[in-house]
Image (cartoon, rainbow, N blue to C red):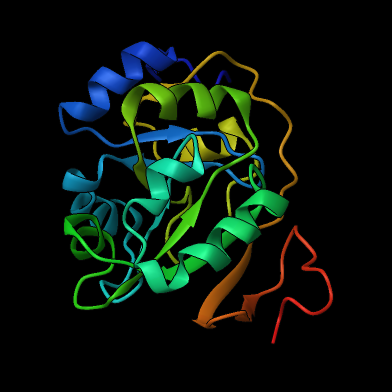
Length: 201
């Protein structure tokens, strides 16, 4: 049976318009398929994913500049250094940040996870849509989706970023690091990126 028979598939320009009208969507990344929404509409992702409200989302963008406008100055130099080494790529940085996007993705807190994925079709979408709130495309507590068919089976009513087939992803979650102080990072989750010695302090 064709898993995409009832799925609406859109190119980057079309899907960007759909996202800005308030829809969520499913898209590829270099690690695992993702659920995405514009930050102002991100609250729906907790319900769609059946995710506990205290677990935040990641902000993805097509360039570091779009993300770092939200980062507090104290962490910016360290963030830019990490980005120059590992972005685009499978590294998520949790950074002190401010603004409405933080309230939308991580309510009540003062930091947010950020990433620029190494996936051309998604970079194209992000270039048109602007930064998006993202999370892995699976129900909370369930195994991650590994490809478009898995993600569509999990969320059949959501639009999908085309074209298909998607680029082959690693199937491994991103490495997550959190900024602690100047020059000091902590690895929260080991993943697809190995941080160079001396950068996890």
